[in-house]
Length: 281
Image: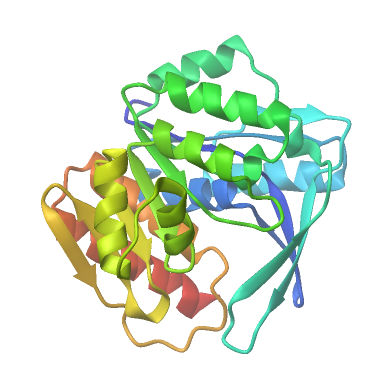
């Protein structure tokens, strides 16, 4: 199939929710959301690793069922990733990640080099880089995707967050997505200050980003570029939980970028898609 090549890059996890296991991980959620939005005209791939266990087999089945390519998912002796998820009274998720899992042991291959050079968009975050092995692969892939939208979803997950790694990823990316809680941390990292909006503008300018997205929960999102600022409010909904909403936002953002839509239209679409996930969870 012809069409743009889109890659999610990083962890595969099973979210162990109070209601039961749910397949996830930010790059996997992004890839599945991208396949739902663009599967008719794009090739969606996930670069990650699973263990040689039942959860690994189930993860591959889930991805293939969503229309995500699994040719670049590696198999190794470590367990398939799991994270225990708790939800507060507002439905906002908190995460406790297992240690030393399959996605911590990515290996570079010539096929990954070819995929990086062929892709038009790649999305990666910080959690997938918590191990040295996977960090080297993720940085090498994103750096090699020279013709692509290189989307860095900051996605801070303590204690698996490193300021030096985040700064390196910010310098590789040409598009950055973060939430309102992560905004002041990134601002401090790059040496800017002020109101939230002032920090967002300065981050984009300091890093020479094509786009900076700041998701703001019920208030919607800001999207900044050389065109200016788009401020789109979220529709009023009764959100059961927010798991996967940010990743769906990123997928819709990538769709808008690939389709060459206006700043406001991209943001409107991304906010609508993320809100639908919150509503339907």
